[in-house]
Amino acid sequence: MNKQFFSDIVLKFKLTLRLVKDNRVSFWFKLIPISCLVYFIVPMDLLVGPIDDAILFYLGMDVFIEMCPKDIVQEHLADLRGQPVQPPAAPDEDVIDAEFKEKE
Image (cartoon, rainbow, N blue to C red; front, side, top):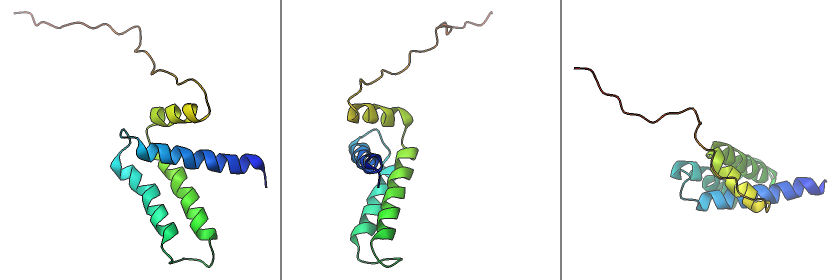
């Protein structure tokens, strides 16, 4: 198999761990990888062998990462890859902050 394939799996696993630890990610989203891990540990199998466990765990990580807020995922991905973290985008320059008063 390709080395890139295994390094992507390791990166996805590390990203999943970081997102599970991050307080900004919803608790309900965190149940996805946790339930996949429980299924992986419990000795009950849908199919014979560890293949179904591995596939379910991989797909669970994939769904979890897709459901997490994109800015948080990008922040952790940049850190894992050793890239500088991009600050949040500045608000649009055309926005004018003002107060509205009604005529009497």
